[in-house]
Image (cartoon, rainbow, N blue to C red; front, side):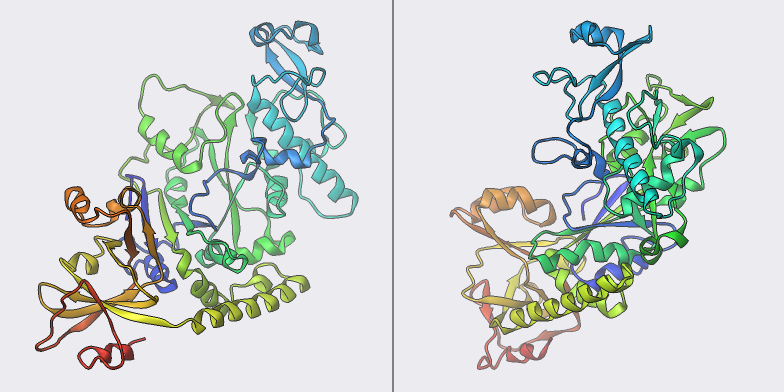
Length: 497
């Protein structure tokens, strides 16, 4: 387990493992179900950054896919920036304290596509987002679809591109439309969460049916900690917002809600939420900290009562090798496409996905697998969950199902774990990536691995025998041995499933 002061990271290798953590049945965390909200991502490397701020392969925001290429956005540029970028003869409107300059969606001045200006890029980003949202509102409204909006938002339907001095974004008047558009995949500045960790888990593992091969992640955010410390003397950047469920059956089925970070337009927008919160906690009380006011109140990210001693996030990293079994468990528990996305199309999709899941599992079961007995020193580190990886020269000649643990100290077979994640690489890369989760010293590692390859085995689905097996007149010469039916000393282990 890797942790920072405010973020606890926990590796998960089975459905039951996650459930036990969420329910507070381990020593890693208490019961999270009442005080935390959850967000599931199919790749553990994905960050807590809203979709509108994510970039495509050309390093442009993906929201540009919903913005026409020939549009001009008027952006308010300070007098100094106009002068430094030689824009004096390109100004549309001079306000005295600043000037409106027309940009296209890729940050080029609309009237000069050969140059790129990055000044006030946050303001231009807001222009992109508001344009896409109002376009969504306009088309949906014309087709008779219900959207809850304020007069302020609706009045802009015919004024997408008009100059509008925005001080903070997102505006509260846009929360409802942002929430609706986000839930139907329009890139927005919102992050979607759920009160139900099963829903988050579904989104973290469902890509296994697409042959994706990444660890997933569930972020758990302690929203009660924020709400319990909010007071009326401040305005807060971090907002939790739950739209009306009755008009959005998908959101209702998924028990969803959203977080927004309200920022002044001149602040950096694309910092991941976890980093923004942790950095803010470190800066609380610093005298050189910038003070911003909204509606006469100081605008702060989090309540100052929250400290480095508070756990803000849990980050549950879901093993890629456990995704298939977890998805099957979720289907059995009623968390599937037809329940999370109510509709006839989702029923058909779930029918196909269940068949696909069954076929993948059947193919996996057909592959012949062996079990091994592994001789381990200091194996108590495994059962006390102090380590997550074992290192060795494991050149197995077939696929391995279970690894049984033979203690060198007590000469007992003390348990076993699933061998569904065996990594082969150079010793340098194995050490760099996994040494923090092992009990090896650097000197011992270098002395042992002098060849060009090393193996790391992740300890998944660990089972400890209540009564270890002591075998008389038994010893192991090599680091491991295969457990075969004709091996009378240990073949009884083949009866364990």
